[in-house]
Image (tube, rainbow, N blue to C red):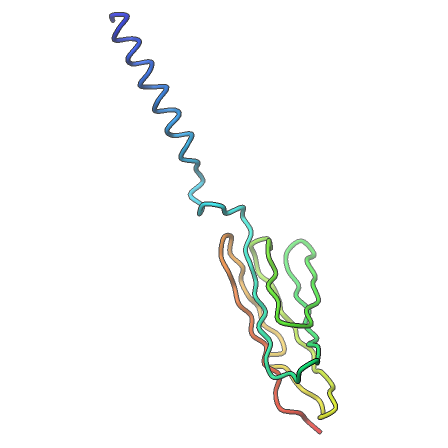
Length: 121
């Protein structure tokens, strides 16, 4: 093999390797670090009233939520969103659903909705 051909082949292989390295890999979305997001939507509470919600998840994750929130950088997995009744001046407001399981996928957004019902007197 001539020196010129060998040099061209070497340059071609180096260019291919650089191109492959620049592409990244893993098949995940750009910017995906293996975590996801969970948005907690809350309705039916009077202004100034805090919700009573607990989110449990992988790796002993535990977060208390009292208002609509977005939890970011969550490990992918199954999360349990539990809501307790709230006592207001109008009566007891019960959440629907009181508990739900939400799957958070890497690079994705999940939603849990808690609706507090009419007061029980």
